[in-house]
Image 1 (cartoon, rainbow, N blue to C red):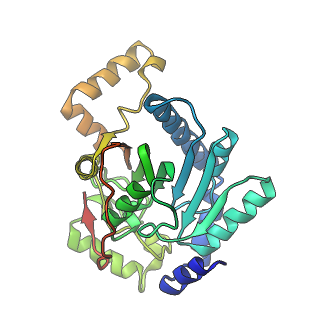
Image 2 (cartoon, one colour):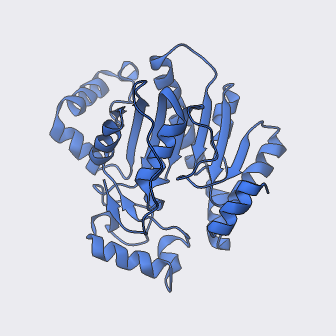
Length: 289
């Protein structure tokens, strides 16, 4: 463990409950998870091709967990680096990469203070992360800082619009009022850890595409949602008709977000955007965007 990782471990409790570790050790390699990562990689490569000439990309996976996404980027000839606050999962990612002979780098670090140089990355992935970071604005600022002009941020996170979610084992939790959410957040950290799958940092933020896109646009990003990212040329006549309706009707697009269990945003960094500054870390609280 290097000096920076030792500092992170001292400042944060990065150990895992054995059930939490076992869950992600297994889930990180499930067919469903791997297919989701493959699709995310394909969408981002499609987006990168539309923003510039073909090139080798530097990819940062923030909240990488066991590093399962690394395979898809490395197999296509790109450079991959993962950062996660959970030390046991980072060590698992390193072992797996070594066993497979993959040239991937993994660091223990926090999303609000990345151990990465400014303007050194082409893609920042934030998979299922923002909901767990109280200072989600600082997390996005850091991702923007390390991106080169024209770089991409990929965000998949909790949805405050859709009643279906996997963060808490409670029905319709996304729609609970803020005070009730904070009550269960406290319970999950004290006497009822199983309600949040034994997570040391349970979900405290709930987002919509609309709120996140407004925040990112104010920082100089151009944003796309899940419907913008569908390649219409691969759809049949019926699929093209449905996609066209979703893209041109605000009401249908909103209903599409309501019926989808997570929020998805891909944002492109404007080359003229100023670099954001670090922000102070607030106390843990429920936030909505």
